[in-house]
Image 1 (tube, rainbow, N blue to C red):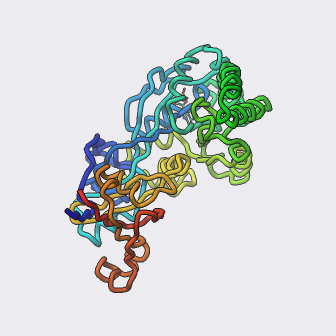
Image 2 (image 1 turned 120 degrees about the horizontal axis):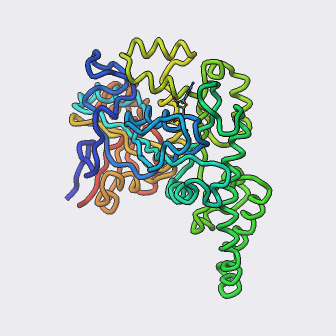
Length: 404
Ligand code: GDP
């Protein structure tokens, strides 16, 4: 049987509470949101996560609170966050509201990005100091590292090293991660050498591990050297610094409006993504109606919540992109890896759709909007039929055909 899918099917999985989905701060008694997500919003499962790390008192809990509207303890002392917590935030996507208008969709379902709040890191974490071991185990499970760095000045909030020094803090955290990786390699290398002597195909793995060791020895993360080393060969070692990095600079108003200092920090952490936001402001936004929230953001030189940029940067850091489906029931963004093929994209909706994939009817979002309706896009020759080898593009609006 050939089946058509027009965005009306849902994968079974957790649905996040509506209150957690509104990216724009709206109190329950405030006027209805006119932001990119209407109230009838829903979301599906996530598979990839960013682990939030950083020194104590840099604002991790404050940021996490803002991310999730959850009540993670944000207290002014180290190790306030002991248990890891997962926060799921929607990826802002104004295209969905436009699609919903064209298709008269009842519901909008955005893609989501998931963050895990991991316990604070201190010098010596790689040796199991503080919550070191727990920290390392949690971070190993994350797909990317979101490092929160303190840029804000506040004499009431103690800095563990007694000074505000973003680059020094990054070095402290990265050194612990690098030391942990060196320990992993110290154990693994003798085993890999033995394996390479017995099996030729293990030689490239050994060489990649040796190259990684040299990079770490020189004080660099593996992510920053990812073009120099065959990292996929040593994925089995779960090295921490091989994960993609994203830096969140928790800034005050002065830092948010200082383009030159921001660029200097960006240059140091490149090729990793950088996000500048004020975690305190982000959490205060939650208690305001939209108008007051906008005023507060503008007072610190921002045009949109920092969480929007964070969600986008997180998505990018994880190597993800979205494609869209639309129909009367819902307009929805689906998460796929960059470079995913059409059948793999269909598989995100249901594994049967990947197995039974026949073809995909695809129109780019821009072409669809320019035409004004699916019928007009078809008439203009903008709707393509793509086969199994098609590589998906971000913003493809898709209708899959498959056999079940
Ligand atoms: P964590 O230890 O990294 O999780 O840090 P917290 O989120 O618990 O923050 C430590 C303290 O710094 C708390 O008292 C927060 O209210 C305060 N804080 C967090 N972010 C900011 C910020 O952007 N500006 C200012 N002034 N204080 C902040």
